[in-house]
Length: 417
Ligand code: NAD
Image (cartoon, rainbow, N blue to C red; front, side, top):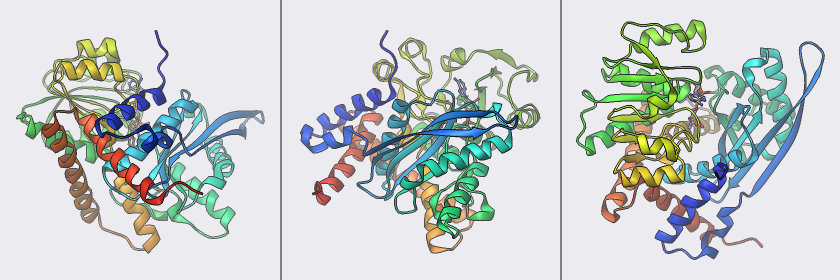
């Protein structure tokens, strides 16, 4: 079996989109290579006095359309190919929703749950210092991703500001509100996913009020999607995290599950009326109308795709579906709203946060959510229309929109020198 390589997966779709756009290799070959890749060693003094050295990365894929933008992930599975892929997906994501950014991503190979808060702070600050030459409001602006949150973004903002000698809130997004974060940022990715889910269900003639929905992942993205759906009265029949998956054909009580996770930090051990524990694989292959993978990449593999029964997949996570699986799902006429469109809400509101920081003003939450909705629906319509008129999948259509914008920007700027 060929080993999964997230960057190769990205290149396969890119080449396909380029061919459909009638591009020559020379038109986009530079975009097959990230502009910059930095690997850093991050020594951290642990609370018991020992020293551990962690591997960290920051990759800038493209700055053709503006400063590089992308999250930072703390996870034991982080590796350079994953970070490169995530950085490239950020380029396409920012282009598909047409915000003036290029793409970047960073990560540290670490299991953060094993670290104390002080160790986590030292790790974050040392990593920030190590990648400092790449960062800046006009250069590269990090944000949260798997296992990173507002508190960690606050530490990044503080570390960068200490080196500068003055406060620079615009160097990072997803910060706490008290130091320049934006209202609505925490929920933005999940909110965006819910907006496109409503749009695609409407187009496919599926009533969300009657739909059976499964969500993989119960973190920032999956948890928010579940909460928004639940508040709208939609029925979530299955939900999972890395430890467990829950199923109730009558619908799960999301409020109760949030209360359980608040205390226990995991879905494992939750007992609710009519709830049974299933595996993550079973969740992905349930007979549902809408499946929202919102955990991590490489979940819907070829083997899983054969068994997927969902009518629609809305990709909350980045890269949850492999290229091989994508082909199978397309043959089965399963509609996929691809990651670079579906989960773009996070970077859209990150952009709003950056704009607010640069202008030193604050928008209210209604303004943020209204603008987010406008951009998500505009982008969805654009991709959907190409998909319908040309008969391509929504993934290919989204890549075509994105690639076209980035190639145009590159062409207009020209190659230096
Ligand atoms: P998070 O750390 O808040 O949550 C991740 C969730 O996935 C947790 O519930 C975890 O238990 C679960 N999980 C991890 N591995 C799993 C596995 N193998 N099987 C089942 N569940 C598993 O992270 P997040 O911010 O919600 O990010 C989730 C996905 O969404 C990632 O792919 C991320 O890149 C993408 N994303 C996040 C944002 C954002 O703003 N946070 C924006 C765009 C895309």
